[in-house]
Each structure stands twice: as structure tokens, then as C-alpha cells.
Figure (cartoon, one colour):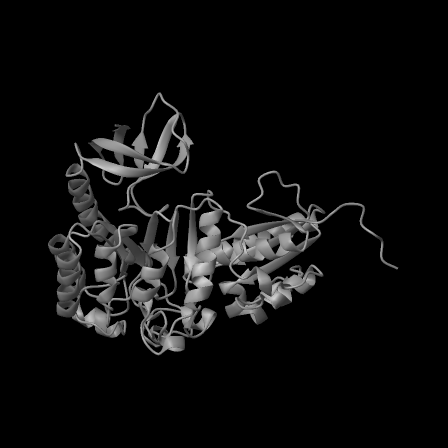
Length: 435
């Protein structure tokens, strides 16, 4: 005989990893809420009885963080503070069989595409009419919008296709409906995300359709900023740049992960592009969209990388002067083609190389920020913290880029735009006052 619970379930969702995982958590929240189940993101009050850990399995550090988070939640369950612990996301997709044996205290494990199955654990129905509806975990004025799932690229270092499968685009109609719903709820900035943005549409429309999608999104009234993340450089669809230049609400911002600049490394990483081709592409981008902010990510310590490769990468950065650069150390992931190579570079050497790259970019970032002093920018106010406001220009994405620190006696509404004159520059942030 089952004892009937005297309290109502409350679900806490903990999200690890990237913005794509965050969107998955928001979709799960929306489904649970539609089924009249209390749900919250990252609950600080700890008044929940069920936890869903949405894991990341991209690189070693992310896997370690995911496993530690699961173990922490299992410990709470063993102390009687939780009834159930469920695990989903990339780590669960990739290592479920092993993890089930290692951590049997978890009540159920789910892959990245098993939302309907997970809802059954809550005796909840998957509501297809909710497609595009989410419970936002971000402040209400910005949101991430995933336009596709999976990836068809075969980069040697990347385990994402193992966890997320092949590239599957959403239809333009589906994306527009989702964007319109977000804007009706007060969203002013949408960040387009995918494992690979530029591949969008090839599977369902038999041609690259990102430019068409951008035109349609730019027509949505009230959508003030559209931002592009994760554009693959090889066979880059240049028509995107024409739309960016033509449409005012598409930010002059492009996140284009290059991973390296030395031809030997680009070939070993299976990036399908050479340094010369990268330089030609960057020149075209800057010519077509003057003043564009370019963000990239780089990997240090890939198998076979030499000190000459690192010197070449540093020279490339000094020549190209990116606005933003993220640097990761290489992680040896089983199932990837690079796993067959010998991972001979010690971790401390990988970190030393990454630090050298960061220091080159730090100087460039500071010089670029100095150029902004005295100029006026449209700034979106994100939050108030320690008595000062924090906002962003169109050249800055959430959490990964610069913030503009604003000291103001007058009250500035969160989620609104203000004109700010930059008064001071730092390596990675700016200070300014409202004009």
C-alpha cells in the first residue's frame, strides 16, 4: 500500500554547462509548470523535494563538476532532505550505463532527447502545444533561442555529435513563433544558439537558410537585439553579413570559434579550413560590416602542438585583434578521432600555453576598450549590484563579454536601454555615465 504524501512536489533544476543546456532546462520547466508541478531553477531556499541535474559532458572539468553535483544531491537524498534525484543532459547521454553502476542512488537517468520519458517520472504529459513555451531562467529582457540541435561536423576534439546526434534544424515557422512568444513576454534581446549556426536549414530546406531566418526575426516588432553565437568558419555563408548590415536590430557581433591558426593544427583538428582562408574570411567580414565585434575561442595543447604553433597563434592574434577571445585547454575525449592520438602534453604545460594566449589578448582587449572612452553607446541594463548598474553594449554578450559599470543617482529600469558615455576602460570592462 502506498502512503499518500502530505505535501506537494517541488522540483529544483540545476543546469551545468552551456546556454544550450539552459534552454533544455527552461523547456523542461515549462512542461512541468503546464502539468501543474511546482518548479524552480537553482533554488536557493532548498524547499524542494526533487532535483533534476542537467549535466555537461563536454570536457574533463565539466564532467567532474557534473559528477560532483550529482554526488552532492545524492548525499542530500541520503540525509532525507530529498525524495528523488534525476539526471539528464550530455553526461547522462554519454555515460549512462557506467554511471548507473557507479551511482545507483540516482532514481533515473535520461539522455538529451528524452524529455517525454522524463515527464513520465512525474506522471506528467508531454504537451506538444507548448512547443516554444519555456519558463525563462534568465532575466526577462533577454533569452537564448536554440535554432537547431546536434552537429554534422567532424572536428577531431569534439564529443558533441556523440551526445547530441546529427544536425536537426527547427523550421523557420517554429523559431519565429518561439521568438514572438518571447518578445510578448518582455524579451528585448535574443541570442541565437546552436552547435553550428551556419549549417541551419541544410537538412530541411536543402540550402543554408540562416540569412532568411535573420530577415524574418528582424521583422518582429519589439525585438531590439538579435545576436549570433557559434558560427563555423568553413564555407561561411557570406549573405549573413548583408542581412547584418541591412537590419538595424541584428547586433554587429559574431561569435566564430576558430580553435587555432596554425595550418598543422587546423588540419589535425579537422577544421576544414586553412589559416589563409581564415584571414580572407575575416577580411571580408570586416569589410562588409565595418566595426563588427568578433569573438572567437581557441584550444591550447592539442596533441602534436609545438611551441612554434603557439607562437604562430599569438602572432595571428596580434595581427587580427579580435574583440573577445576565450581559451580552453585540450581535453582528451574518448570516442573522438583525436582520442587515437597520444595526449602527450602535460596539463600544466597546456595551462601555461593557454595563459600566454590570454595575456596577448588581454593587452588587445584593453587597447580596444581604451578606444571607446569618450564615446556614447546604447547600453542594455542587465542588473543592479552593490549600488551600481551593470549593462552591455551591442558588442557584448551575456556572461562571456565586457560589462559596462554605471554609477547613477537616478533609478535606471532593469531591461531598458540607456545612452552611456564611456569614462574609463579596464582589460575586460568599461565604466560610464548616463547621458
